[in-house]
Length: 464
Ligand code: GLU
Image 1: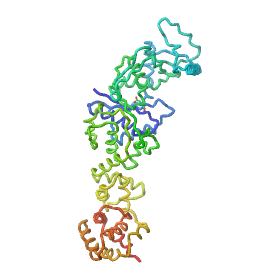
Image 2 (image 1 turned 90 degrees about the horizontal axis):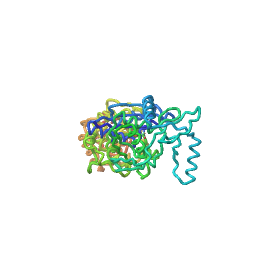
Image 3 (image 1 turned 45 degrees about the vertical axis):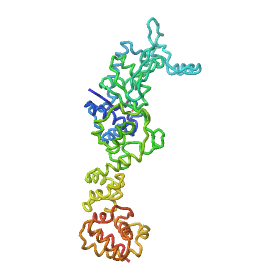
Image 4 (image 1 turned 90 degrees about the vertical axis):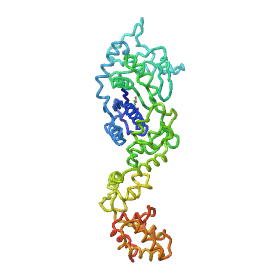
């Protein structure tokens, strides 16, 4: 049984990198009919917040990355970590160390001065035949992991290939602080073990932790999972993705009018490929997803491609669903949607050219407000030459069949009668009715309005 996990630290939002890690872990479990576990790594009490936990849950929920187990909170598992720490001390896999922080600092300075890599010198590490110093009275020790002193720790990373680290490079890691609380790497190890994680898929900022985690797992007699370390995501400009790039939280993509399926499809291709396939559903992704086709090189974010995908998914979406997503956006602007004109019908027409939900809200807004076209725009398009044709059109509106083809025919008749080209009438109609100079086909736009509202808005032009 394949078991993967997503293990975010709740210190901020669910950002794009985290979302991709979650997506890959989720898809791998789904592909194999396994389980996907959510674990909240909240042991950094100074930086973890309930709001950040909620932001992660919201982000996963918005993306539809459903988990089978969890969320498990590390802060609620302290007793269990302490039990495991005790077994490690009992077995000799961990030992108390009384070196003070000051002593450590001095040790490091001396090592640096001598051109050596700073590391714990092993004063309190038990060795056969070694007599340990007498513990200072009244001092509580930290616990250190007794790292193997020779040999190598190696793993076949599913993304990066084989990685080998000499144990001589790793000093004895502190696994519990003097106050008894376990440290980060230790909690991860205990959890990956007890949660039965078979595949650890995470960002490659954790590569340095992996040899330490493997050694601890082995000391516990726990199976070592398979690791896949995902390369980082670069921004559009080739720099490491950061706040500077605007959208940091996945929920910001929601704010900016992206559909979750577009973001998911986009993320799926950030560092993974299936031939030339660019557009696919999550069901297809789960069928195809494997670790073999993850690229070891960094993936570069491409906003244009995300926009292209979003436009694609908007076109493919049901109008009623889009209306339900656009209505709250209008409400947030103080615009109340009424039954007529139909928001779904407006969206059906405008979604062909929109890249995001906010653009759809922009397009729909004029249909529901007391529109005052901008005087300058109006003056630009409502030129005297157009007025007679417009007057004819207004006269025709009363009786024309209320559907785009008939309205289109009426427009043609009106321009024909006055020897005008289409834009001469179409542009003032657009501006008077929607306030916008760019709209889909004007006859289709007009047909969205109730006849009376068209008459009311066009009457502005004939007022003295
Ligand atoms: N909590 C870690 C983070 O948010 C991830 C740990 C892991 O995946 O092993 O970066």
